[in-house]
Image 1 (cartoon, rainbow, N blue to C red):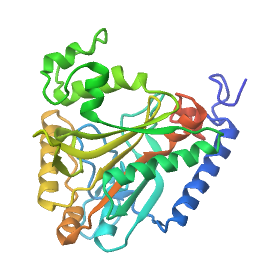
Image 2: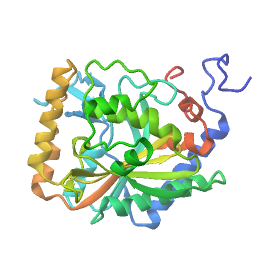
Image 3: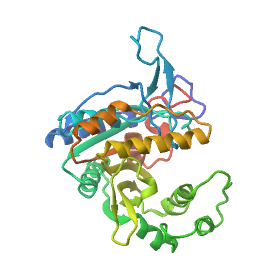
Image 4: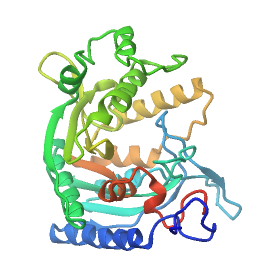
Length: 332
């Protein structure tokens, strides 16, 4: 039986050794890619006094037992290096990236592991459209390691739903969104409009994405802005300057034309925390250091986070994250 077989001894890796060698080659290719483009690798803290307030992301926390000199003992494991990287940008560091481990509570299964590797980078003076091209280019560099390639296609979020589902995601009623799920049965309790839109993406749209096509979905509803800027789409609808990149059904990356307004960012943090409190979920403190950095003068830039494990899964055409990890959650 193979090393990752279900009956293999627990001490054995969950991935084949060839997959682990491929991961090393991929990491080297990423570093070479950015070195050629003068994008500098940095390392930022894994533990922070602030956590991710996004209502759909759960953070791990721990209690520090040593001397804190008045600082909070509760520390949060990062769900991405985003806030620290933005502080570097505000300080004038310039184009940078980090390749490292991040952590998310409650996410374990076929496609998820509580700790995983994220690549995140920022380009000063760029917008989301320009960053889409570079993100797709890097994915194609990765695919070349396994003798594959993929064409890039861009589509606006609104157009995708119109073309594939025959409904306008901005104006359709909540009932119409639910009906578009067809035979997919979901308990509606506690779900809001964005939840129904997300369910349509994961259950009706993603499964039909072409395997060898890189699909960049951009200009999301304003309600899904996260940390992106907003603009008018030309028809009177505000949209978030955000994109997600898919290879086949796998989501690989999430990017933004970054919000630079400290007051607006603080308001979004507060809205997130209110949602979490209503749900009875832990509400991590706002990252005041990030807000201060934005207020000090944040450069116009675009940034993107890419899941390296998801990319490896796509490269090896597997839907099991354990197949690309040395030791998955069950063997850690």
